[in-house]
Image 1 (cartoon, rainbow, N blue to C red):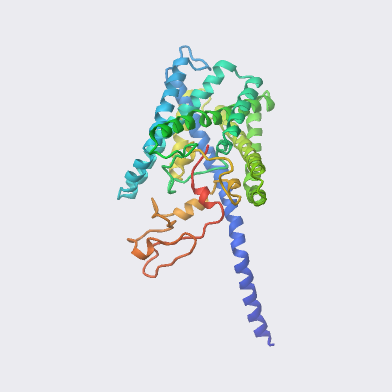
Image 2: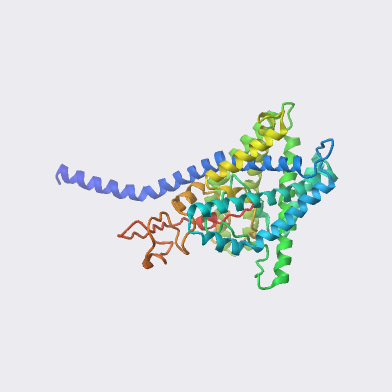
Length: 423
C-alpha cells in the first residue's frame, strides 16, 4: 500500500473517530457552559432581584414606625393575602394567559406580555415567602434553635407529601422565558379543573402546605448557616457561603448523570422507595448548594451595595436583578411555580437538574412560542404543512428554507425545559 493510500485511510479513520468523539465533547462543553451561565450569571441575578424585592416590601407594605427587623402583624397579613389571592389567580388563568399571549402576532408584544407576567407574579411569590418568613421570625426568633425547628418542620412536611424536589433553586435550576410551559403551574395532586371544588382545594393545599414548607426549609438552613459560619467580620461569612455554594453547585451539576444512572438501577430493580430516597438525597445536596449561594450573594449585597441607604440598595438590586434576567430571557427563573412529585420521573430523569440555560436558549433561539411537538430553532418564513408535525427526536432539514430545525434532545432536556421550580 502506497504512502498516499495510507494517508487517505488514516484521514478517514481520524474523521470517523472525530465523529464518534464530537457528540461527547459537545455534551461536556454544553454542560460546562450551562453550569457557568447558571451559577455565575443567572443565580446572582435571581438573588439580587429577590433581595431587592423582599426589602422593598418591608419598606412599603405597612412599615412600622420606628422601623423594626420584625414585621408587624398587619404587614404580614397583607403579604399573606396578596400571596394567596395572587397565587390562586395565576393558577386559574394559566390556560387563558397562554392562549391569549401565544395568539399575539407580534413577537415583541408577546415578550413584553411575558415580562409583565413575570414581574407581577414575582411580586406575588415574594409576598408569600415574606409572610411565612416573617411569621417564623416573629414567633420563634433568630437563634439556632429557630433554624433547626423551622428546617425540620419544612423537611418533614415536604418528605411526607413527596414534594421535597421543589426545594431546589437557582443555581441548580433555570427556566427560559421561551419554553412551551412558561405559563404552566402544576398543583400537587393534579386534580382536573372540571372537578371544581377538588381543584380549588388542590390549589389551596399546594400553595399553603408544600409552598410554605419550602420557605421553612430555606429559612431554617439559612439561620443554621448564620450560626455555623459566624465570624466577627460578616463579609467573611458570606464569602465562605458563596464559595461553598458555588462548589456544591458544580458538584451537583456534574454528578447529575451519575445520579440518574443510580436512580435507573433502583427503578429497574423495582426498589421504588429506595429510588425516592436516593433522589431526595441527591436533591438535598442541590438544595444546600442553592441556600449557601443565596446566603452568600444576599449578604454581600448587604455589605457592599449602598449599605448606608437601604432604599437605594433595595431598588438597585431589584432593578438590576429583574432587568438582567429579562435581557437574558430568564425572568421565569426568579419564579417559584408548579409542584413536582418525588419519584414521578422515570428513567433517572428525577436526578436531572433543569439548569440548562445555554441549551434552552440554543433550542429556542430566534423564536417566541413553539409549534406543538417541534422545538423550533429558527423561524424565518411561514411554516409549510409538512413541517408542522416534525418529530422532536429527528433532525429535519427543509430544502426551501431553514424553517424548522428540530434537534435531538438529550435525556432530561424535556424536564429541564419545564420550569418548576420549583423553587
